[in-house]
Image (cartoon, rainbow, N blue to C red):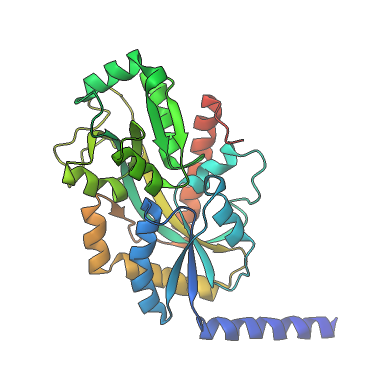
Length: 322
């Protein structure tokens, strides 16, 4: 017994010593979606100031596939030393209801670093779509629903959920076209290969402000956006209660030492206070997390509440990713 206790004490001391000198090499920030997509944009904005705070480079790695579930599974099964971490949006909360055999548990297989930001969404069409106003859009899709295509960033992606809610409230069933990420979906929308897309402002604001590559029909939040004040909400245009806002959080594998989580959380908070990050996020009509949200406990509570919320919504809609 004494030997076992001594061994445990030695291991604990070694762990504390390693945590004290952490990080000693590059930290990998895993993104579940393709390069150029909304979550990737956020990750790359945060990586530089986080790396500066940590004294090591933070590299962004895109691990794409299976509706955004491959990346969390990879991180959950990574060594819990803090060198492989995850940034993910609300897909962490929707996956348990969408997948019957999810290979990880969002509530049990991770340590929480903190919430990052909230991102509104917008409803866009290809630039030569027949409708020019939201009433015209509703009329057109109701009369031609078998001819209208609705793109999304993949099964389980927020764009799929936003599109699902749109179809439900309008009372239509459109042809959904899943892509391997929001970037490819946006490229095809601008290229005229698909008709509609509901996507995050981190990707759509530059396209909307350009005014030449797509049409915009509304934003998905209850209030208008300061960066797009002339764009009405879907709620005020008749889709009462339409509210889809994408939140992002940062995670580490379960069992990552608290001292390491504390350093990662400090680096995250440094990043979301960075002037360049604040400027870019504001330009993209997004809201960085408050100090209360950008904590391990803040993320844990929010994830628990969101898992419960979306479980009801998804099961009521009868939607499955399998």
